[in-house]
Image (tube, rainbow, N blue to C red; front, top):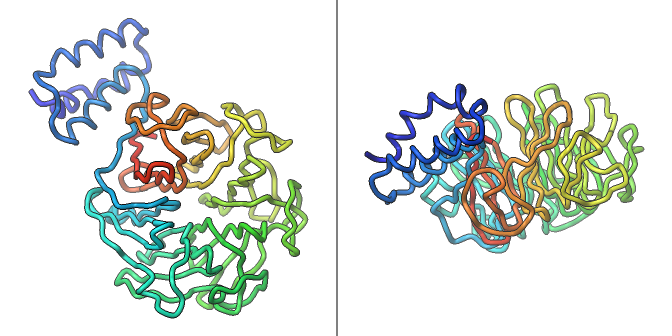
Length: 373
């Protein structure tokens, strides 16, 4: 009997057994699953099913696997088109945007030759809008590039390798090494403008860039407050919930900040003193270590690639922080929950159709998948 058939037969047990059985019963359940395996799984799908079966028996739901893809060099960002499951990766050191279809087929979607007059230069941010257009933060060239689904590329906002803090429409605006980008609705985008220590907003079809939060002078710090009274320190990841609240991975302050629709900036999770650590908890009782990127699911749970803790963290709308996967030690092991390990996770994206998370790891050039996060 193949393991994937075993898993399908046992999947109905999850709600009634996984969280209710005492520890000894869970161990017995796992033992019975293993006894049903006639031979070692030979295919990738069987390996995934085995991990899922073990997770079911142990009561841990999240399962981490590694995609069978290669050819990346320090991938720092990942985005997904949830309509068809296509992944887009900012392959930073290779200065390319790569496309992954069916979780196995890798092609170059855009490289420096596709932008002769404004080449890719350390792209470190990526998102996909509802129409399938891909937006890339071309970090070292201080601009944002729009790539249509057909692969046609152009500068959407920012200058051509010119930095600054200027607001304005399209290419008249200036950024300073932007990284995180979130594709909202109705041509609205939020950008973590790292070296300006600012959060910028891009709106309407004219791509008007404005300062949304942070110092107008680009001053770093750790201050909560209203809009431009607030201070950030190398903000990197960014996302927004269904109500329009924006969340920021404030990297060197080791916290996750929240910007309300009224522009009020608060510390959503992490130390109020900016202290690094690796602690689950609620709100400011939790600790992060250089949180890098953010994504959000349909229930408004925020997921964090906690890069220096080599783990993936989850924050509920109430601010409760838990570790979804990873154990604080760099590694590349597949497995369930904290039995899995990551090596410098950077990019993170949530596929709302398949309800899975993808992570790009800069430390070992791998693309990981988290099922049942």
